[in-house]
Image (cartoon, rainbow, N blue to C red; front, side, top):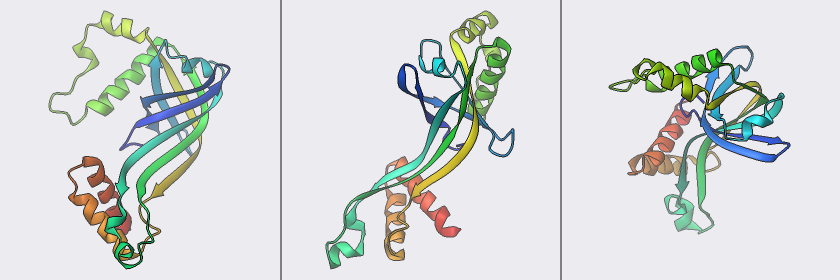
Length: 194
């Protein structure tokens, strides 16, 4: 969740099912599972699902890649193989609440800015924009806080294949020109090293 903070937030409220793609900050407090924080544009109807505490699901997708059967030994031996997809994901479930307190929103946006600007050659700061502009923008968003009640890791990294196939898939993905493929191969390497 920290490495891939863009989540799909899903709610099922009076207006039906809503889904939004938004970056979410993970705060480990309160223990044991912590809190997820985000904001949406005020016109996004999803925040209304959380005007009263509501159940929600946030799906964080890590690296993923297509895996061709051409990389398996069984392709040449028996032909009994099919394509697949390797992936890593986390499903966070919990209770979602909306808030529009300006002080809290300013703190949230400041935290998100620091989190996502850190490490950039010329990090932007909220202080770089006129304060009246920031105040106007804060009025255009609604904060979301999700108390996490469960975390479920989901992953498929060729663990169902023989060791030789796993090594070949990892190797081929790491040699790819696609950053997504390379990241998936690296994740397979981390799993192998464990």
